[in-house]
Amino acid sequence: MGKIILDKMAMQRALTRITYEIVEKNKGVEDLVLIGIKTRGIFLANRIADRLQQLENVSIPVGELDITNYRDDIEHDAMSSDVKMSNNKINFSIEGKRVILVDDVLYTGRTVRAALSAVMDLGRPKSINLAVLVDRGHRELPIRADFVGKNIPSSQKEKIKVYVSEIDDKDAVELIK
Amino acid sequence: MTERYLILEDGSAYAGKAFGSLATTTGEIVANSTMNGYQEIISNQIYHNQIIVFTQSSIGNTGLDQNAYESILPSAKGVIVREYENLATDHFKRISLDRYLKQHKIPGIYDVDTREIRHHLQKRGNMKASIVDVADDHAFDQLHATVLTNQQVAQVATPKPFPNPDEGANVVVVDFGLKSGILRELSHRDCNVTVVPWNFSAAQILDLDPDGIVLSTGPGSPENLPTSVLDMITEVQSQAPLFAIGLGHELFALANGAKISKLTVEHHGSNHPIREIITNEIFFSGQEQGYAVDPKSIDHAQLFITHVDLVNGTVQGLRHRDYPAFSVQFSPDGAPGPKDSVGLFDDFVEIMARRRDSNDDRY
Image 1 (cartoon, rainbow over the protein chains, first blue to last red):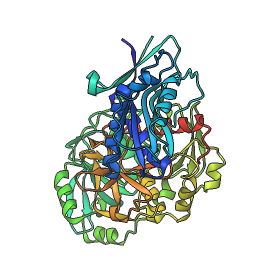
Image 2 (tube, rainbow over the protein chains, first blue to last red):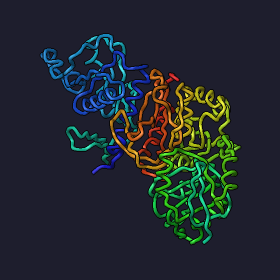
Image 3 (cartoon, chains in turn cyan, green):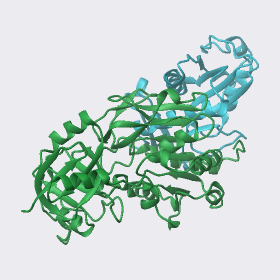
Image 4 (tube, rainbow over the protein chains, first blue to last red):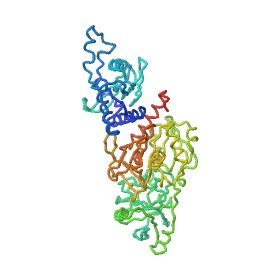
């Protein structure tokens, strides 16, 4: 068992704070769209959208991004371009939108790099911001988050595990030695 | 035991027995319905010039704890309880409620039906009251003639800045009559605190290079303070993260164009559910509230309403749309009351840390 870094309440507060900061930085919610990166980023994006609904009584579109085909650690064969995007669920245009990419953990930055490529292939957004629940450091690319729930300085030997109640039966962030 | 009287401005009188100081005093009478925490309540400067009626039936039965004072010199004017226990439970069995009240020249009355008084106040609204030896015409004349100061903040806030050093974020606390709970929570989070007088200017505050600024709780109406305080707030809120509590929250609202009204009956207790709008979560907190932000007066282009009281509908929290500045009417530090919302201090510390770490120049 790991050490709990964020419990349920702390996770909720972090998402609440990120939501306020998104409105603050974007001077409102106009043209805002949320795109969650595979599995847990999607649930976090939905929770932020729920908060924006409560706060501003607006429905912000939420997309689901699968970056498998954009990963730099998997060799793609020549056919891969045909199946690109097959698992995305983005039913709206991102042209001219303010995109908030949402992920659970920011680590090397390679996932975000892949996500940026994937989003760019969908159109030309006005801007892309990055919101993450946890920033654990050790970047391998020049990428930083605009909205961070919690900075957790970690060693590369450690693991950070994010649980979301939608699929994990609890809300928590654990540091596993 | 000496018989004494609580007399009210509307002519009512309640007989009871004396404890604490035998002084004759006058103040505004308010009822507090919190179950525990009489020490924190009596020592909270928000009760400056007020006579506190406890609806909890037995008061004094846990003595006084060295670590639970909310100020050094309490400025309440009286304590009314139904049943009073003279116990001292601190390590050295030194301080009981009776002794504490005598030390600070605060009179008390027990053997009074405090819930009846609470009902009376609920119907008639807040008013002046005195604790006297004889409830005759002369006493009522004196009560009617007494004018309570409206410069409460200047009476209880520190006249000089002082440090509360630690090694974390550099926080300036603007003192309007703060309760120690605010400093306690900041200390728990390693904040390096400087407490400054309420009339410090924005320039004086910003000269201290704060990572964040706290506007404290305090007594009385925010409208009794000069508008220079509001100018200070509008200037500092764009320069550093701001967290305002109680009177600080009311001032933050005024500074951002909202209006304040006095509640007919002050609300002191921790029994009102509070809803956090963004998550729809319900929680409880200690509330000591004589004034409220008028929700209709809020400019939604500038402020979010973040929390509402589900019993009386009052605005319990605000947040600025453009700056990391937020405020709550209730006491997130507990002391006394539930600590459901103490995480607001974590949020504040996190916001300061984020801002220090980032090279973002948007402010």
